[in-house]
Every structure is written in structure tokens, then in C-alpha cells.
Length: 350
Image (cartoon, rainbow, N blue to C red; front, top):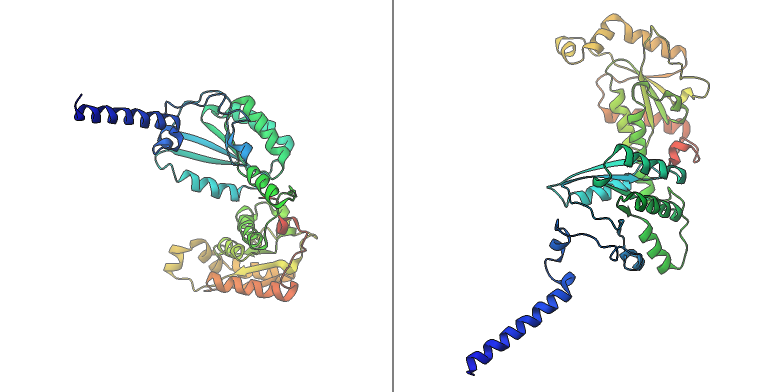
């Protein structure tokens, strides 16, 4: 045998060894993730058993039943949370961005407790498409994570526990059990989430909506047509103040929601009396009509008779209007404005 033939045999043997290693350690080779996402790949029952599950080592995992799932280009992620799901949504938005060619819809299921979980899963099974559904959760209570995992396994719906593995890892490293109390945040995060809640309060209490919550608001704005009530409420929300608003109507009188439970020192009337001209009639027709008809003057009189502070915001930008309202609140109630145990200041868990 020539030296050339010998070298060729050696190369063949070396290539066989490499192929054997690639096959044996395929998850560590480049392209392993491509194989993971391949439509032909399926999860075996053994690979998803508790013994082999990555979660047993403290790593987050998608908990799936031993059933084979077809691969789709769209999915609905149901975010189960004891609050309103802001922190979970931010994580899911970041993950969804990794799949620009797929359609991923996130639907938040808020304010859940342990008793609600079976109903939630049953609703998804009945009204949704379990084959294209994923359930994710941000529960800090272990019993809720365990119950959700059991329900999803029974219905063959993939389940992602977004918080539990991190809590378990922290407990192991710190040697301290988690409090498992929803809604607890570090001070910086607490301030941020309170601002978010204040903005949501403004949006859900616009134009008299949910007026039964007025006693819990930092301030209530009653104004004439198109004076900027809604924009001011949201802007105050970005500054951490909860504001509700409605349009005042002298013909109908003050809203019934202004009952004895509402502190009138938190109520502000907003009026605007700009010069009526063709430009105003084109841009703010309803406001121009209110000024010309005397409705704005009548509103001011009605509010003052009830002892409500009336602010003339003619020509004011939103920032100036907000500063004016806050100056009154600070003067009357100090920095806090509401008791620390108020449900809307503390808010539900997120």
C-alpha cells in the first residue's frame, strides 16, 4: 500500500470519529438551536420527565405534556397574573421580538387567585385553540405555580413559570424563604409601578367612567367642553397623581357621584373662555358654542356655589395646568394626599 493510500485511510478514520462525536454531543454543536426549532423535532416523554427537566436544576423551562405538538407560525400567550401583568408583558414583548416572522399575541388574564386557575384553563380549552396556546405566569406563590402546572399538563397546554425558578434559585443561594406575597417591590420599582397605575386610573376614569371610585382619587376634574380634562388627567398620572374627570353640565347639575364620601377640596372645576373666532369654531366647535351660549359662565357659577375650586385655564399648556392643580393639592394635603393604606395608592399586585 502506498503512502498516499495510507494517508487517505487515516483521514477516513478521523472523519468517522468526528461524525461520531458530533452525533454524541450534538446539543453542543453549532446549529443545535436550528435543530431545536426544526418542524420535524418533537419532545419525547423521557425528555420532559421531572428527572430530566431543566427546572430540576433551577432553570426556567416550558413545561409540556408528553404529547407531540405541531409547529405553527402564530401563537397566543395567556399571561396569568395576580395583578395586571405589566412586568410579565415586558418580558413577553422582549421574547416576541425574537420571532419577527411569527404572529404572537399576548393576552393578560389579571387579578387571579388559586380558585380561578381551573376556570381560566377551561375557558382557554373551550374558547381558544389549545394547540396554538401557551400559558405563562408571574405568580410568586408556589402553590399557584404547582396548580397551574398540573392543570396545563392535564389539558396538554405548554406552561411557562416565569418567576418560580428564580425564586427557588434565590432561596437556595440566600438560605431564606421567599415571602410569597404579591405586590412587593424594591422602592424604585414601586415608584415606577405606582406611576403606571396612576395613568391607568386616569384612562379608566375618563368622562365619568367608574365614578364610584372618586373617593379614592387624588383629584377630580369637572370641566367645560374641550378644556383638556382627559389630557390633564393622564399627565397628572405620569406625575404619580390619580385623577378622574367628567364634563360639567349646568342644565343637569353636578354629578351624583359627588356625594359625602368625596372631599370637595380634591375637586377642581376647569373653565376656558377663549376669544371666539372662526379658527376656534373649526377646531373646538363645542367649546366655542359653550362660550357663546353662556354655558361656561353657568358652569363656573354652579361649581362655586357648591364650594368647588374653579380654575380658569384659558390658553394654558397642560404642564401649567398640572402644576396649578398640584400646588393646591400640596397646600391642602401635603406630599402624600392619600392615606398609605388606600387601595389605589397601594394597588393590587402586578
